[in-house]
Length: 380
Image (cartoon, rainbow, N blue to C red):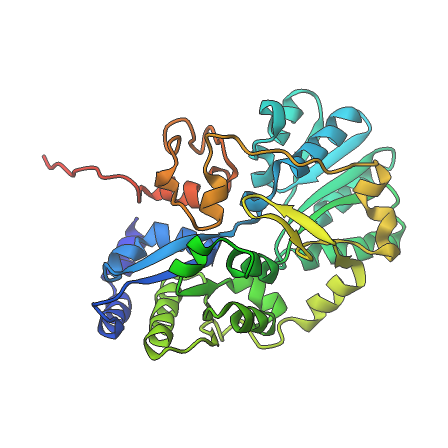
């Protein structure tokens, strides 16, 4: 909390806050969607909304890979881990372990039932595990936006080069621009599109893909985008840039995060991704439905490393818990506190929905930093 207090009392924060206040038109409302969960985390942790004028609101978007992964994809991983006990080692990131799936299960609970499920820091750890256990099949459950995709691609290239035949990937890598189009495109609900004036674009994703892929979104959906870093000052600066655009009636793509994001992005990472992956025809996103060309799968040259192919896994759509509002929160239609089970039945210790699992999820961020609470402070 000391770091947070120091930031809020700092001259830089107060300076940007005063500039934002000077820019706004007091007679209108401003509403911006922060697409990425990293921004949601920063906004909640530092209480940025308290530093902004009351007629400026921030809406949470779907930019958390754990949050948007549908139940059916977790069910596939649980199925293969339970059906092949003693033969399969399933590896994934730690926050994936607790995503609620069908029948009250999660990967963590599947592990308690005897499945060999392990957490790793990277797909390279899973590959090393496969090399060390040649008599076992090792599956890496890969998730993430374009940020983590290059690491999976490089791991698959290494596995192919080294001839590691007991290693496969259950691929769930998804694409950011496609999700933006799904929220604001012509087939999207008017509710969100009409009330959002602009988008705070993701930082780490943009380091990989650059700024160019967002131009089509700006042109077709008529929403300004400002790519912003994850530091609180970055977010506030992006809000100021968006307010300037709205006031001037401009709709353009801008890059606040110039210290790390370029127009073309990381061409080496993009090359590795292109050599390993190809577009899926469609992919189910939690809360957003099935979006065409919004995810990746292994291409023909790497098909031997595709867990879906090797273990004959098939995706089955599963409806979310009826009491959970994660879908509406991911679409920007509702806030965490609008969910009846938020903070009561659904907590980080007992997540009912995916938005409460990852620290970047909107519900988890709101709960952790108490942004929804109205607790009087007593002294003495």
